[in-house]
Amino acid sequence: MGKGIVFIQLIMSVVVWTLMIGKGRELRSMKRGCAEFGRHFARAADVLELYLNRTRQLHDTPLDAIYGKTCDRLVKFFDRERRTAMIAARSSGEVGESISSKEIELVCGTAEHMLAEQTLRVEKGMNTLATMSTAAPLIGLLGTVWGMLAAFQSFGVSEGAGQLAAMAPAISAAMLTTVTGLLVAIPSGIGYNILYGTVREVNIELEGFVDELTGRMAYEFQGKGD
Picture 1: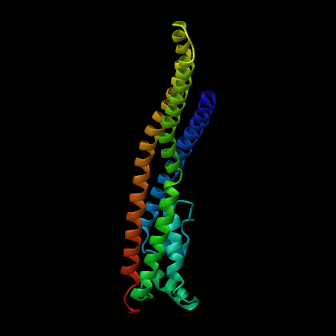
Picture 2 (picture 1 turned 120 degrees about the vertical axis):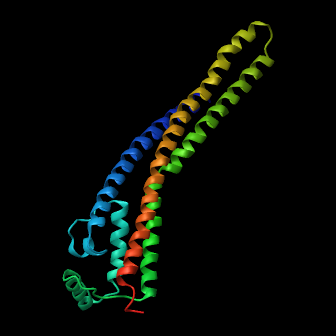
Picture 3 (picture 1 turned 90 degrees about the horizontal axis):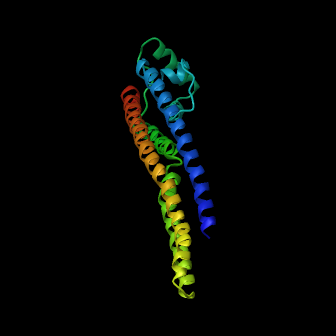
């Protein structure tokens, strides 16, 4: 039983370290991509410049995904002629087309939906890491209690003071599962807290971007269609 629990804990340790290393790299890549997109978006003359002119190819980052899908939803309100007129008007610096407040609400709904999807993407794997850090010491404690019960049962049916010395290795082996569990739980707990801080930073950036994106779309497009 003890060997089986230690084997399970070793597998959990491999999974934990794989998750922490992989998630750390993923979050660093997301932060770099979001920072790059934010710089391009801030320099754009209007909210649809990146989307319509394709001055920058959209990448697989949370901000790119939110921006691309939200812009897809916005331009669907314009037929082909209106889209052509809108591009021409914006190229010449004119106001161009506008849409109604209800249509703006639908666009905002798309942005919020994409925000929820990308939040889940950013947080992917964190629940597994938290579960591992919680379960590892509990599994180790189970192995220790199981081993102690077996040792005391063996001591109860035996005779002689020498049996107490014979129990020591069994108790020591039983404690090994708790030690192994702590060796899994301590780094996974530290890693989870570090990664969770980065996850919060990315999610706050996504929320701020959605507010800015929908606000700019409402400011630039809402009006004439009401």
